[in-house]
Length: 192
Length: 173
Image (cartoon, rainbow over all chains, first blue to last red; front, top):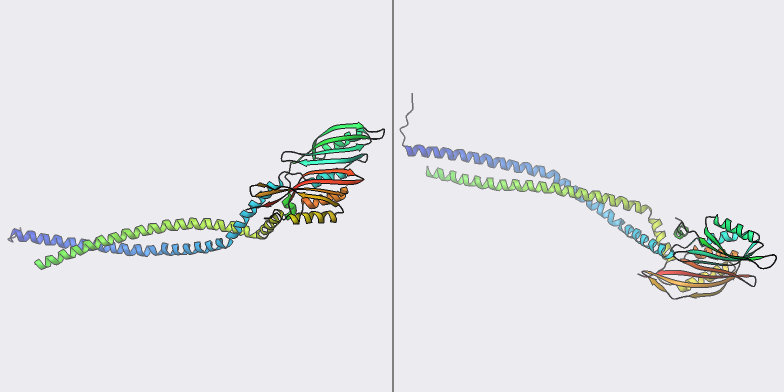
């Protein structure tokens, strides 16, 4: 059995429009509701990173305060480094003069006598010029050999060794001072 | 019937506005959360580098006393002013202490090299080899930096003559 509507066409289409309008209203309401719900969820979710951020900012501030308190030390350390460079520049590569002269004085053979020593140092070289007397040429030669073996000196050269009288000869040596290690004044003075 | 339709239309407009506004708020909130996350990452990196920095500073703190001593020692070795009178007095006292006679002392023209100023000194003493060694040690390892450039030892009337050319320093800012 078929239903036959006898309502006018305008009335039917109006009713259809109203029905669509109603569905649209409900759909929009649902969409708005979903969006509001999503907004609430996002707001709740943002609480965690917000509080984490606050805590991290506080931690950063505390660390920065600690760093600021110690920053003067960094300046001091930099200043000490600069001063050490200045000190190294001033000291240069001078030899360990005390050890050298102490060694020359202590290790002098019995029959060799020094009359003059000239020690000089420039940035590129450190040398000793030694003049003295000895009982024989062999004494001088042996002393030259022992000087070369000490580790303090190299290139020990004889300028002359000549007879002064029947008992003595006069000699002159040029000696290069070895400077393998840098002079450690600062360690000596500060004890560190 | 017309009135009812108008109400519906108003409701739809309100919903459209509500959807648009809440959509905007959702997008804004999502963007804000993203921004928070990246800010957190940046701050974490900051904190990491601060912790490293602090660790180094704390290590430095352990050596603070030593650093201060070193600074004071260097400032005595190379002071900020020439203090020529101090040099003369020290050398004179050293010669007396080590039984040598200070015959002469001369401080030459200063030479500037950056912030370092060199002051040449020429000294002559009479004494013994032992007194020379003691004085030399006092000069080299003394409180004021003295760099020995030349030493001339000779004999005169049975005495040892000692001529020393050296440099002492002060610094200028």
